[in-house]
Length: 154
Image 1 (cartoon, helix red, strand yellow):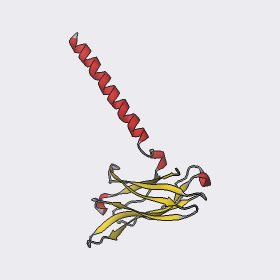
Image 2: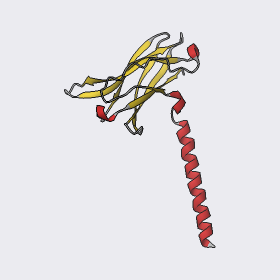
Image 3: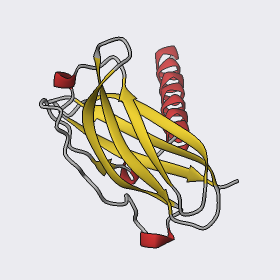
Image 4: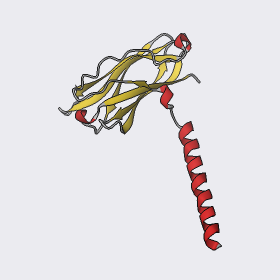
């Protein structure tokens, strides 16, 4: 009988831990629906995948108007994989904080990592040319990426 109680207690603990993990993960970032597809690739040509990343048209506070994956030379003489693009403030008001998140995937569609860039005080109607560096990853390792934006007015 002690074994049944131990099993039940363990099941409750595992279930609680799983539930808490899922709840915290749901509150800590953008959902998959917030990300739009990018075009990675071994060639690094990325391709322009414009679009405004908007589900509600012009009513959205800010949007990604264009983005592409490319390589750039660092100050140390090495090359680095980056996603470059533009964020536009679709309002007449100041946006206090803007963050762009990029998730990189390998050939097996497994997520390699998430990379971010941010800025503050994006004026009404203004644009921000962003660059998200994909640190510590080789160009040949990234087959695809997706991208999302978060904009906050306080």
